[in-house]
Amino acid sequence: MTTLLRASDSAEFLGLVPALAGFAPSQSLVLLPFHGSRAHGAMRLDLPRDDVSPEDYANAAIGFIAKVEGADAVAIVVYCDDTPCRTPDGLVLPLIVQVDELLGCAEDAGLRIVDALCVTPAGWSSYLEDDPELAALPASDPLAGDQHAGAELPVADLVEKEHVGRALRDIGAMLDREAHSRLDGSENPLAIAALVMLEDIPEFFETLLDSPDEQPPFATAALLWCLDRPLLRDVALVQWATSFDDGVRTLEAQYAFADTGSAIPDDLGDVFLGHGPSPDVDRLRHALTVARLAAARAPRGLRPAPLTIAAWLSWALGHATHAEHYLQLVREIDPEYGLAELLGTIVGAGMLPEWAFRRGPRDAA
Image (cartoon, rainbow, N blue to C red; front, side, top):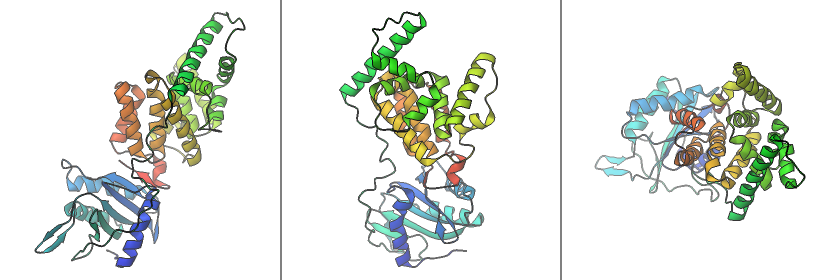
């Protein structure tokens, strides 16, 4: 059955959507799962493409809501740039066919309809009204950008990039000299400090989370050196998504796999696919800051690894639009970068991590 909110309630509710989503959506369908009268975050999808049938789109969208723990109702908000069409029979809202299919699919799934609203530059209205009329848009949060906001890499000036580049050269040269037992005391002390960091990789990765946006050049260089090696890159991803102890386990498992072909434990391997306990959100955000800063400072050839890590962390946080942005930057540098290709398949298929259905804002497209 359909439950209608009063118009004043709909207007107030509409004004809360950006806060629930974490951004001000544009060209989007926003689905808000409810448990009783309480909304649990928001899920954003791109508006349906012309080559996707309304039925397929509705089934996929409502399928996401059906996975949300405890969800028994849904509200739908369409944000589009199209102008409603006024006909002799009244106002026709954009995407009316697709929304009708969504509402029918939701009711077939046993979900109560809380509201179904349309937001356009000309105003907003309700798909549930027999004779809809446009109302003035509620005041928007001046601090809220759309779903793309915040994806840009931080600005790194030429001096920072040069310092990181030199640090990388010094670290590489010193590692080569150390391998041939030719250290003579003339090495850059900061390079020696970086080498000390690399003696305990999990501890180094963990330390980076303490001051994520204040990394000295040699720390960034040491991280880029690690991320350029898939074995260590994967340790960083799993550790930042889980814990220091799991980072140690992952490093041991990676070495065992490289030496003997031993299988990686399932609970560690499944992290990349979004399976397992919900990660600590602050930990993911700090790691994302570290990865984004490293990508901004890195020489072009070393950017794919931190960009792919940033893409995965964004996806893990429920921001697939940001993840796709970073993956596109990887494709522009190395279209065949393996981990990015795999993650691109996951993001492109609209898959979300399991924990996305347990908490907070989500961005499915």
